[in-house]
Image (cartoon, rainbow, N blue to C red; front, side, top):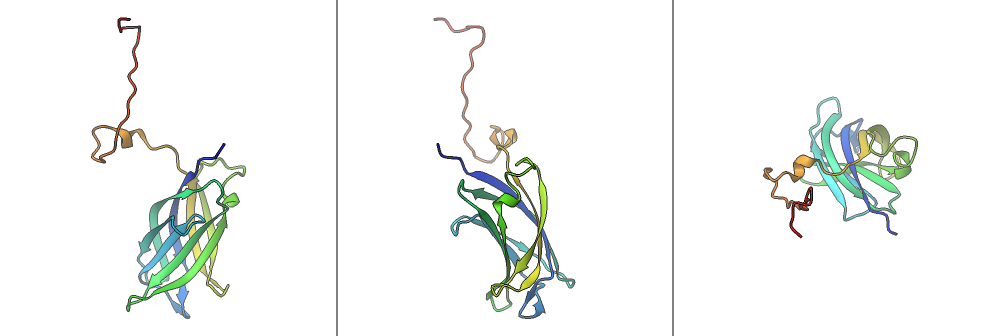
Length: 163
């Protein structure tokens, strides 16, 4: 029997100490979050400040396949000329936040060191993660403007239908 994929709700809270070619990366910084797949990823942008501290606080929903063993957070920046530069990457073992003593649906806050492609330390990324629960009932409400499809099964009480 195949195991269903899990959907992770991941929030990149902040990043700090980011550098590109020895200079602080303060503008046009963004993350790419992947769950062991090059085709399944989400992206968000952050605004930098003079302290080199970036805040996102944007939730990602990432599908984690049943065989996935790691989650990857890549931090990148876009230069003024439009070139995308890699800042650092953190590869997180799924076992660090799933399958342990903490229930899957509990929110966990984690902090990981970023490394550039040469293996040198290059900042820190702070994030929270948990397994997303089923969609809220409000998302399936007929009055919502989401344009979703609602499926209903009629229930007959007290045998009110004539046989």
